[in-house]
Length: 115
Length: 114
Image (cartoon, rainbow over the protein chains, first blue to last red):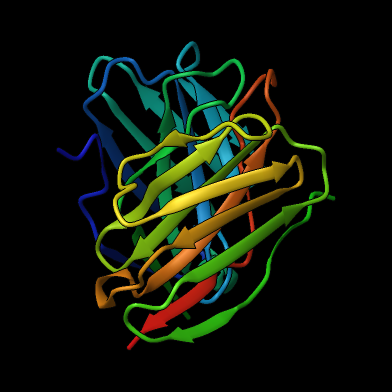
C-alpha cells in the first residue's frame, strides 16, 4: 500500500512558466514533508520541507503548499529554469523530532523544462 | 558541508556472490539509512541505524543485512546476490534530535547482478 503518491510520472513545462508538482499521502501520522531533487547518477538533494503545523513554506523560487484536510501537498517552481529538469521526490516522516525513522518516498515525477 | 560517500559508484557482481556496500559520513550523524531506487518504484528503505551496533528493518529488508561498527560507517551486505537486487543503492544520514528530518544522501552505487 503506497502511503505517498506522486501520480504524475512526468511533467513538461516551458522555461519561465510555473511548474507544479503534486503529492498525496494516506497516513495521517505523517507530520513532516520534504521534497528532494535528483539528477541521473547522483544522490537526491534536499530542496524544501514543511511541517504539518504550517500550510506554506517558501524558499526563493520554490514554494511548498500543504493541505492537511486533503492530505495533499504541492511544490511550485517559479519561474522554471532548464536546470530544474530532474526527478522530484516527495517524502514524508511521522517523527519530526529526531530523524530516527527513514523517510517514506513517492515514486517521483520527472520534470522536463523545455526551452 | 555534510559529506556522505559510498565506496563504489558502479559494481558488477555474479549471482550468489557476497556483496558489501560501504557508506561513510563525516558529520557525526547518529542516524544512517540504506535505500534502493528502482524505476517506477521510487526510493524504498532497506535498513536504518540510529546508533552504533543498532539496526532496524525498513520496508524491504529481505535478502539484506547491515553492520554499524563505527558511528561514521554503515555497511549494507547482500549475503547471496540475486538478479532482482540489481538496483541503485543510496545511503543517507541525519542528526538525531534535530528539528527536522532532512537526510543527506551519498551519490549512490549502481549494482548490477549477473
